[in-house]
Image 1: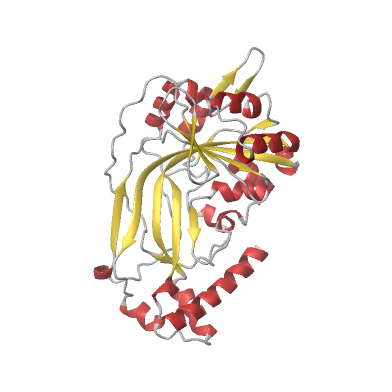
Image 2 (image 1 turned 90 degrees about the vertical axis):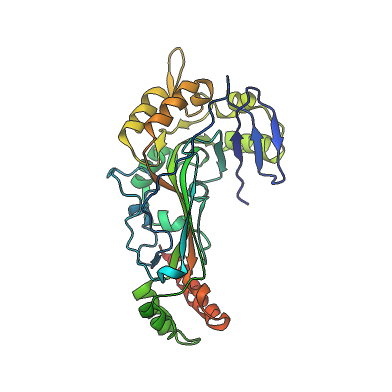
Length: 358
């Protein structure tokens, strides 16, 4: 059983917890000082491939190379450079833009992750692909130890030890896109689509090869800063049991001081920005630091006690971009029920093989 907890950091100065219907979610007042100004709405249009189709087998396990979801070295203006194609008729599809605040949420998403796979799963918590049981493997299947170290800001010893991990993430949604309409394929794609028949595996594979297996149903672009804390197994189990399972502790200061303070955890990972912007990375390395008499530690929690840090971070990330949520929908959903089920059977079988062998 994989457990995680999300702390939603509100804008009040005290720290009582309000529990919601979902047992794994707590709302925790955490921002010290005055409330910040009402966030502005960002109405800027972004050229993004929502509604376009792609073959997810083409890059299964390697999507982090072509979708900006982790801080890659090749920082630039690209967000998605995965080969996609417009297969829908323009009069049948519309792209709905839902402007977001372009402001960091007053929410730390904090996940308790039992192991490295669990950590990867929760980092990609907001990424889905119809028919894919573990969507995070689409992005992480190719990751080896040096890659994990780079993208998670951890040492090799932490990754290879029997540690539990706590993922601390602060998300800044900028624009959400979703496609709607009575989707109809363009003439070429439609002709190939109509050749798909139950029992004819080649007809499915030929269509997928030429036109794709899924289309981008929705996506959210913005940025995120995050840090991973590595705890030895006894400390991790104590923290998870007290905070999540038995809920013995409900005060942020107690949670921090007793379980997540830098001097308690085995390793305080580097604080990273999903966009990979070097200025943001440099700022986090210098400013988001817990200073003690003889030591200093990277700590994303410092933005709670130093509101000016968050204000500066807002300014630095005003134009940075990364994909923070993504949903792939199967093209097979457009087929008649009988052929649709066969399409999904073939695709899901192939996906299962990829997930096992990647």
